[in-house]
Amino acid sequence: MSATVAFVGCGRITRAVVSGLVAAGGAPDSIRGVSRTGAGARALAGEFGVRAATTPAEAVDGADVVVLAVHPHEAPAALTTLAGVLTGGAPVLVSLVASCRTEAVAAALPGVAVVRAVPNVAVAARRGMTVLARGPGCPPEALAAARELFAPLGEVLTAEEDVMETVSALSGAGPALVARFAQALSRAGAGQGLPASTAEALAAHAVRGTGALLTAPGATPDAVVDCVASPAGMTEAALRTLDGAGLPRAVRQALDAAVALSLGRLLAGPGGPAGDAGPRTSVSAGTGE
Ligand SMILES: NC(=O)c1ccc[n+]([C@@H]2O[C@H](COP(=O)([O-])OP(=O)(O)OC[C@H]3O[C@@H](n4cnc5c(N)ncnc54)[C@H](OP(=O)(O)O)[C@@H]3O)[C@@H](O)[C@H]2O)c1
Image 1 (cartoon, rainbow, N blue to C red):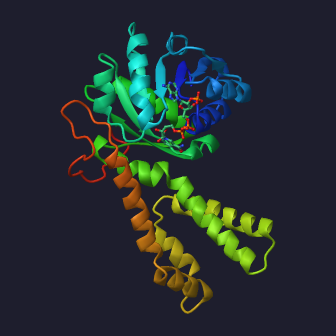
Image 2: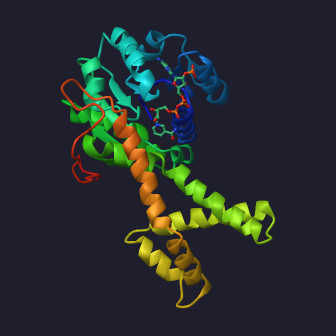
């Protein structure tokens, strides 16, 4: 990473991104953080040696990329502040804010190139997935700068803005959903008499190994299931019970609930939908720009 990056908002996702950047060899002195109370920025500086700025103006001064990582209800205040300080050159603004369309960010920051990004916390282990969507009028160089920022942290795809709430629910929240499954698996193992720490390790490695299999070229979930489940065997019995208990339906309902929440609080741009994004186009995530 050769760019100077300023993080406005220094909570969980900023910590994950900075952790990955530093692990990838990013220079801590090229990273600044600023947060509302300063607590998040100081914690980031203490952990990674990056610079804790005391004001947004200090944080963004000379930055090539500004990453906005606050909650949706905090975004209007943060954007108003940024509009007052991003007055000189025009760094790229990468917004990680959930439920906040690029139109809304671009309208608040005239003249600034805006990219929306949905990373997940696996960026901390440099095994993340980050999905990017260009804002209105965003030049290709700005998208390239965002891609360059996240590329050392795992995979990077692009998508249309219209699918980003679904992307957030599936990919942004994905590690929590998978971790919840691992938790249930390990508790079930402990319920069968395994020591809790052994059950946790077995479940964690099942997730890690399965991730490697699923992301191999040409792999599919069905093919991985078929590799394990022999006819009338114990895996098949377990899968039949899982499906019968409603796992696919529960996962669908969980995703629907997350998307509905996100759409319900959507910050749209001027003239755009608020609270209802309208019909969404199909997922078009891909490496093309
Ligand atoms: N967590 C994830 O896995 C994930 C993944 C993708 C996207 N996101 C999105 O990223 C955003 C942040 O999530 P998070 O989990 O990192 O939140 P978080 O842990 O609660 O951190 C929020 C941070 O925002 C700061 N903040 C609030 N208002 C501010 C303002 N006006 N100016 C500067 N800083 C301000 C807080 O400052 P203080 O430290 O001073 O209180 C805190 O550092 C959300 O929109 C979330 O949906 C999260």
